[in-house]
Length: 86
Figure 1 (tube, rainbow, N blue to C red):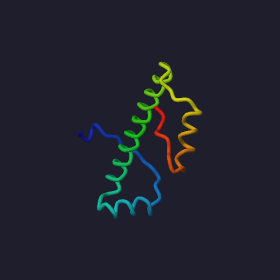
Figure 2: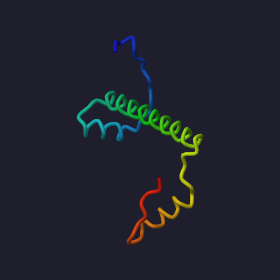
Figure 3: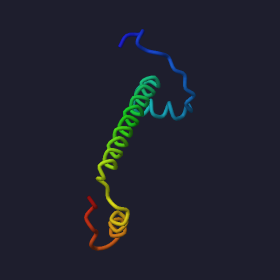
Figure 4: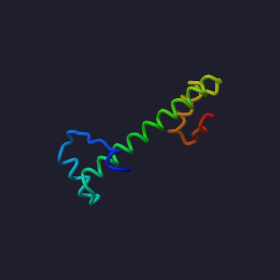
């Protein structure tokens, strides 16, 4: 990526937070911010993908009923937990 392919952004970040992470990883604050933004974008893309996948499941009626999920969740504290509903 060349200098012309970038844009300077300004963000107010508490110095203790920025310096703590940068110091711990022995990286610059700029590197930390690039990593943080890249990670956030990837997380949001994954969240969007999972949401679209779930909506497709609902459209084709590939869902698990509330009662089955509730029974499974309640069984987790027991000596014989139920298998996760499918």
